[in-house]
Image (cartoon, rainbow, N blue to C red):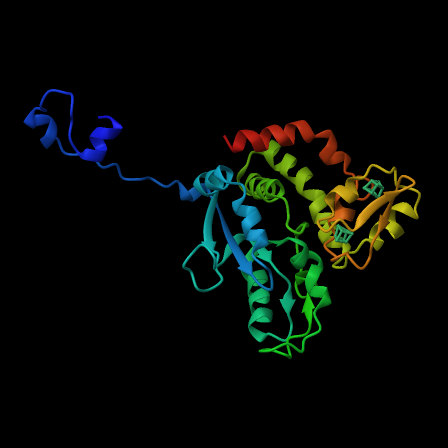
Length: 287
Ligand code: SF4
Ligand code: SF4
């Protein structure tokens, strides 16, 4: 049946259909969802702008593959109906915590209690980011003045920095978490190598700004002038002068992208030497 036929609901060229064809019942197939082997995932949304959610959605078909094959989404206020934080394998947390908001403080604590792995997703959850500039005094909650990265209230296992974080990084962490929890010993080893620098970032602390490059890279004689920091900065606060980064601190929103992107900060031989295998494994998983 062609397009016109379906639009006008009649076959304008073919011979009349046999009654038997018309009467044939349509077979309905019951969808089988192989949820048993999936990891369970939650998404706690605190003081964030939903940009991290959009970054997750920007995986397009990759997100559908994740949901289809690997992830059973138990809790996510934007996308699912569950009203209360659920017990899960992995929780992604977007946004920082307003410590003047009792509910937000309870939510982050409950997320930690109910999750085997907590991932701080995006600059606000990792480092406070733009919420570091909050001073309160605005209607209708003038007392809401203090915002902290989630690592100041709970133990965080993995950081995904960036404002917004890259869709590929979110996807890769989700696949790596799956391989870590459900994969073969080789896949677990690869996933561990991949996640290690992001776990080291979580251990390092909760503050970030352009100064990290100065104190930990440039002043240590480690900067090679590659420009990765400038490329990573979402607000173009970094220029290069005489081959070295120059920061415009009034522009810096304290997202931590530059330092984490710098190859002289978290350069991990584990990841770089296994890059091909890690990439192939993740790509194969998403087929
Ligand atoms: S990314 Fe690191 S090494 Fe490259 S220019 Fe910036 S500070 Fe220097
Ligand atoms: S300089 Fe740019 S990338 Fe670095 S922390 Fe500031 S805003 Fe983020």
